[in-house]
Figure 1 (tube, each protein chain N blue to C red):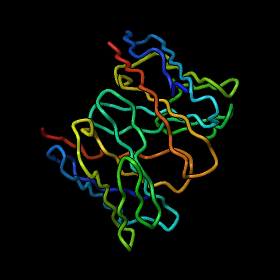
Figure 2 (figure 1 turned 90 degrees about the vertical axis):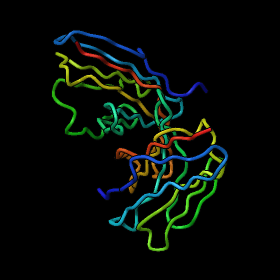
Figure 3 (figure 1 turned 135 degrees about the vertical axis):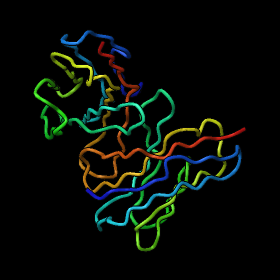
Length: 109
Length: 115
C-alpha cells in the first residue's frame, strides 16, 4: 500500500487559515486522496477526497500537487471545533482504509 | 437517519472472559467495517462485510476474534479469552459499496478495557 507522511502536530489560531500537508511520493495513478478527521472521543469523519484536481466542499479545500506526490488540506477559518486529528489516506479500492498516525491540530483562541 | 451506532460504548472485562460488541450501520449501506484503535494511533483495519459476506480479514484478527453480519444488517464482533493487549477502541463504519468515492461513516466506538 502506498504510504502517507504527515507532521505529528500543528497549531493554529482561531479564525485563521490552516494548511495541513501530506506527502505521498509513492502514490499510484489509481489512488484517490482522502482526508478524514477524528474529534476527541468520536469516530473519524469524512472531510474531502480528490484524484487530480483541487476540490472544495463546505468543510475544507484539497489542493493536490501537479505530480500528485503531495497534497494539502486547507481549513479556511479554523474554529475551536476543528481541533482534531487529521488523517490523509490513499485509496485505490472501496475496501478497507489504512490510517497512519495523522496530524493533531490544536486551535488556539 | 441516526448514523452508525455501537453498543456498548464502554466495556470493562477481566482477562480470559469473552466479550461481544454490536454495530448497527446506516440502513441502506451494504458495506460494514471493523477497526481497532489504540491510544495515539490511527484506526487499524480488522475486517469488512459486503452484505452478509465477510470479504477480507486483517492479520490482526487472530483466531480469538470472530465477526458476523448474519442478515446483512447489524454486525457483531466477539473476542474470546480476552487479553490485556485487546484493550482498545473498537470502531465500526459503514458505507455504500462499489466505488472508492464512497465515504465511510464511523460509529462512536466501543472502548474495551481488559483488567
